[in-house]
Image 1 (cartoon, one colour):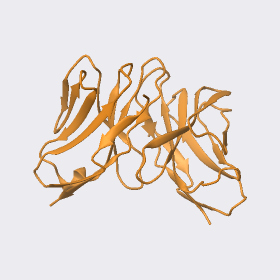
Image 2 (image 1 turned 90 degrees about the vertical axis):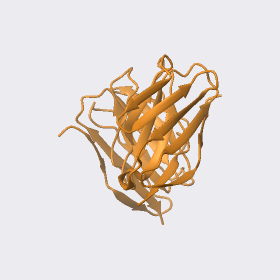
Image 3 (image 1 turned 180 degrees about the vertical axis):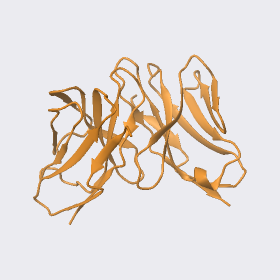
Length: 112
Length: 112
């Protein structure tokens, strides 16, 4: 129930294309869903986050889509660039304890 | 510059030795965390602390120990009891009772 399942494990997208990474959860008590971006040899950094009161949040080329009934959320990267090549992690938490539960990560490669 | 520093960046340990990983933050955050990252897996929580002189075990605390004598510092000791310590270790901090965690650059520990 505490798991967050992330797919795909790896993804190759052409420059200019749309990258889509999906996450699914079981615990309906989760109320915060962030995405983190990690470059090789670095720590993760918060990219964008959403709460269940909205179905979509957009920041620049990055969009989170949230489907509460399906218990799924996804990250869309529009006009993907080689600089977006990184590992992306979804996570979820319950605000009452603020402990993040992490997906396994998706290694994204953008081909020039 | 505000941020989280971890040292060393790379650490090599012989079997049977204890090693201590340093984590320092100047963000004035009360909460600090230690995670372990293995290839193809998400981040797993080792220990966390929400206040000085107090800390709690995470999901994989066996073979690890921590201390929190100062707000700025949260060192992690990997003991000889940890059977498979080779991994990338990440320290993070946050404002207590908020969701966003800020990560350091990590320490890569290799057991020889």
